[in-house]
Image 1 (cartoon, helix red, strand yellow):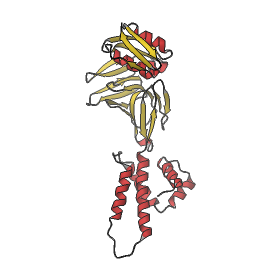
Image 2 (spheres, one colour):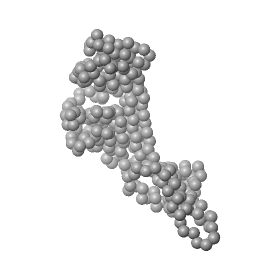
Image 3 (spheres, helix red, strand yellow):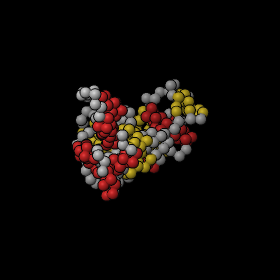
Image 4 (cartoon, helix red, strand yellow):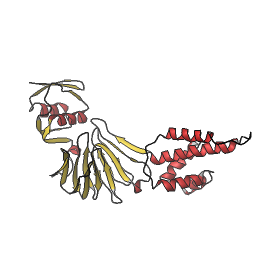
Length: 301
């Protein structure tokens, strides 16, 4: 098995961060030629779904099943084979390793990707991408909402459960929450694709919303998403969506079994004061509420 120092070298090698001296030291490893072949080939593969621990276990079992001749036991070659097998699993695991960013309710996070692309994550959102070979595969997976400023370079793709966005420009906002998929282009050009292969090209000021399984075009007039300024606005949105957003921004939980969440709400709230936000949404809807810590109980008047 590789030492901790060798593990570090392999990780830095995959990310092209080794110094000249470190490269020379890595070349002295007996497994270097095998590693080099693996690294060169990995650039052309997509990550499969597999269990690294199970893969190593199967490899060792197969080695143990190799036919043995006579009574001579060559222990050193076997140990070398086991070490090489473990190292191969390790290096593949390093290649497929992902970087994850997550925000909790009431939290926002600014992220800088390896190419200098900046991402602002809204509350209760997550973003992930491959740790290595980023320049050859600029692809991120988003759950929640985020605003992107993408640097020039190869294609940049944002994947969500309901659709994906391919960057042909630089600045855009993506909302990919359960049951929601919405994209707004603030600069440049993006291509939006739904899960069933519908496509729309968005230019600056264009937006699109997935509704009833159709991509519905719309317009945006603000210079940046309102959530980045600490505000949410809704136009004839189901009350459930508004309450969900309040929960995300304030880390509260509504008890809402006795109200009609399908009624439509037009208006907004800010993220600075919970009491004002609750009044802004619930009073116009004729809903009474009682706050007990992080629990807000709702009832009709």
